[in-house]
Image 1 (cartoon, rainbow, N blue to C red):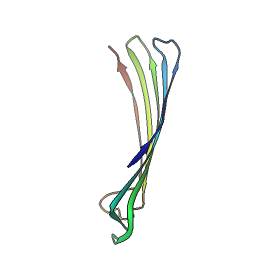
Image 2 (cartoon, rainbow, N blue to C red):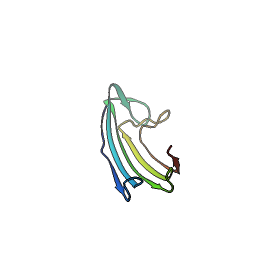
Image 3 (cartoon, one colour):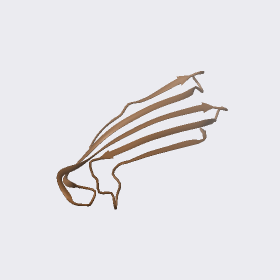
Image 4 (tube, rainbow, N blue to C red):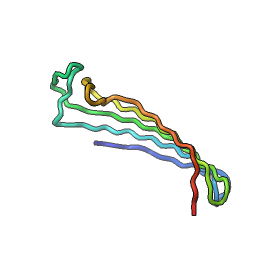
Length: 106
């Protein structure tokens, strides 16, 4: 597997309690050298299985009091594979998740 991804954080406002905005992304390639792919009917082919995954994320931390902060986080990802047989397991899919909440620093 090969994975690469940058991440950045930007700080705005006072140095002691800044608003923090984050961006991140990643790409991963995974190869299975001993696993053959299957067509849509489940018949094995000669090609080896591989997957490609992309993920992106954005976050915001907004300080409300000296110890409390408001949090927002969103992630979106996509996985793509050359495997066509999906009766038992899906290799190609999309996903998204989000978080809204508070953090307490002590």
